[in-house]
Length: 621
Image 1 (cartoon, rainbow, N blue to C red):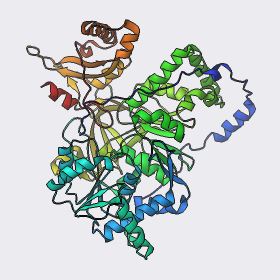
Image 2: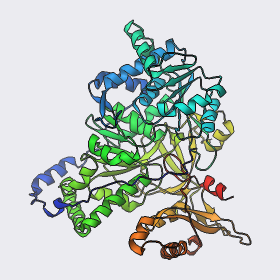
Image 3: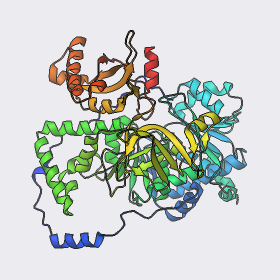
Image 4: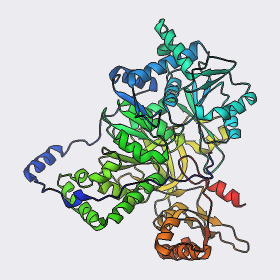
């Protein structure tokens, strides 16, 4: 749904890594008898963590308020020259109750649809939680949408209030006259009193606190129906026009329950928030899950501040998209390469892997400099939203960080599969979470077919679109609902899911062979001279078959370093084409790339940095 014409991953600045610890590791004394004893004790024990059984987010809210009041809930840098502000669970939940009380009793917005739009910020979290705990239906909106699309979403959702960040003030002001249905425009971080339809967020919080202080406990007494429509999220629309996904409290609570047996979070954990909150992965797994466990969430100031923010907040976990993880991986390894220690680092990876296999883990000590540049405490890195090269995941595991992959869609709120932290399988998208079941529809000779999902996290349906809902959800003989994901993949003997493509992106040859662009794109992604690419079937006049084509954005930094400055367009084309021919040798003939296009502008993308293929192809048309 979002179009990013000028989006670039920032140039992360990593200091030169000297990797001194790799050379100066003290002798490790290994007590093999003690290790054997511990391994014997662990044998037979279930590796799964205790599962939670929440029915609503309100239930989680009440429990976390009582249990974790003194804990840090949100860390945010409100002033770039000052340290991160630490906000406790007590303050956060007080603000949620105040906002909820005023919106329902003073502004009469109970059960209304309320748009939330803005960057990741404290007031966004407060607004969203207030909706889930009893105000009305939350409509999280992508802040990067152009004005006409923001207006369209507000109209389509029938919103009667809009909560917006200060950065969106000018856009919202221009739209006000076109939105007569909206009763209130509420600006975050504003103390403005009610004037016409505009009012400051802080004013509403203050009013709510006075109401609570006077004995108004009505908001906390609101009972939540787990099945009631509570969240409306418009999909990114990477392959088609955006649909409105309707979620209920049960869907969101089921996400927390689904993750709990696979990944253990404690009060000591801190998540680093870098993905946009209007996305279900960030709002559910990056916020509601840590909130249920008493963890803290550090809000990244923006992509270009990732490294300094990581160092300052020292998170233990981060959810990111493949493009971001790949960039971190490349920058760190380029720095190691410059230090001349690549060979030594690879050797120590083998040594530390061998030691870890017998119960001795010294990875954090050996690779201390890498950890320091990621804050020093990172233990979990989750890749979500798209496939990632398995070698990157393995490298992350090799330096001692748990590399997990999550799989799901907005329609599954979003979690459907996840890597258990105690059973990593790099390259897979994880295995079905405890509240879900996966199956492959009409598998081919390789076991590949469309991924179908049955899950407690599955949406109620598409907003005002029964035909679209019926198209993707089918009922089996027992009355179970199965969702057609549109993704193509297979399940291995252990139940792990491997995604091989997207059914809507599939290129079908004249003799019925299926080509999944994602598979080829991952291979092209290993070419240093290529920054980004998109593979597709190109219609060529006079050709019966679609011509397998690659649109490529060159890595000019790499080209300059290895081939010299001032390269002509033809020279760049020839260099990349030679690299592509090497990839073609590894592909069966019908998958080979026959056409190369050098792209000079950025790809059209969603907020999770996925290329919007249909938009790219429409641009060509």
